[in-house]
Amino acid sequence: MTFVGQGTVQRQGITFYQYGDYVLRQDVQTICAMKNGAANIEPWVGRFVYIKGCEVPGYPLEGGPPFVEVNYIGEDRAARDAYPDCDDQVAPPTAFQVFIQRANEALNRLLSRGVA
Image 1: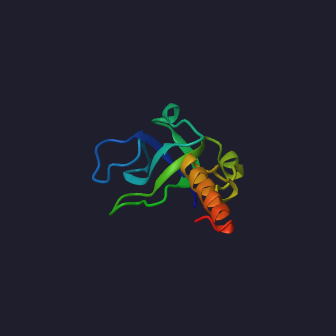
Image 2: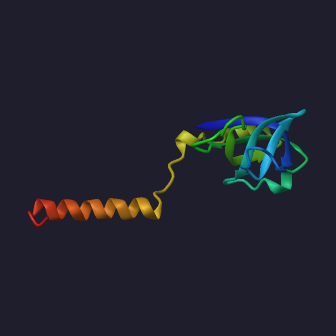
């Protein structure tokens, strides 16, 4: 799911939820925990930015903020809004997913021959 936000980037300190390398804050409120995706967050520490990224599945954890893999970060709101949504980006299959797919195909070939 796509996440958009704005605020000041800070390095993540010690927190009760312990995920993310950075946080996006507005005043004293944490908007989200963040990690690098297609965008490098480090150069933006201490600056007001607009972000767009993909929410990491399985988060937030108990009482923690959303966890976002950041794909766009910058000072230009229009550029952020023009950046593709997560739903528009198709992730390539992982090596494990390819392995399972090939194993299933091989098993189906054996079953169709009556071998298994």
